[in-house]
Image (cartoon, rainbow, N blue to C red; front, side, top):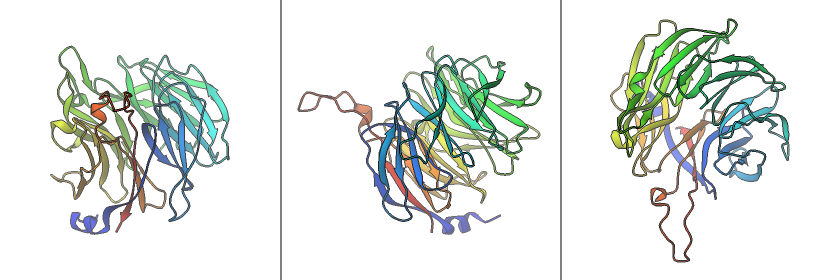
Length: 355
């Protein structure tokens, strides 16, 4: 395992390009082939850019077809499919490399309301979804046929992830309950206690498991969100709880900032043993961090971006993209000189990761 100083020398993010957008985006994901970057929009569109080597990213026409916010973006590389879902319960599959992608299949009412997360099985055959209806469902990735329904959560389910071995699935909810499902049996066989990521305050539920991520070897499960400080105007310390998957024991809790920094919105467990994470807080604060679990501080951090919501590492391992929010977005509603209101947008920051 490399030392922190060695990692600091090898990985030094340097911003090389910024993409301007007219809309607010959430999730960013590079395609597995590395030729495209996709972004889920709050305008019900899937925004996309062509990535050609070291050349500037070229914006392509967006993919239309959703009715609500598009957040989950998941790829099936061998099948050439992109799976997306929205806040109205629609899941769709697209041939993402087509010049004008059209839906291969769509399930219009996969959940009663917001589909919060999607995850593809390691063999590419199953697609898991979860939502605000407290349900976890498994679909055929080939045609969208529902295969299994898992209904033991008592609260909204925010995140779902397949174990790299393919035998298990995990799902995390509003109150920090993370269930371990044996897929073949269709039942819960254990739980991880991430309740530190939840608090009831001022008649408000704050927190929840916002993101689940496995290490490449499947030994570590990361549960991300916030350690809530209070409700009202939400405050909390962005946190990642790292569990040993087999035993269920908590190994590390990473505290990534102050109470104003709020939520870990996205993370990547790097093969070299460190965590890449982005956070979004108030008022308009955002962070990009690279940190080794067990260390007290990141070996790289940047607070130059406002309200960071997503991070995606390019397949070449040398570049990454971060979606942020325009400065002053917390003041949206201030009247402009022409009498109209400013809408939010999401600048996309492209970094070189490897020094």
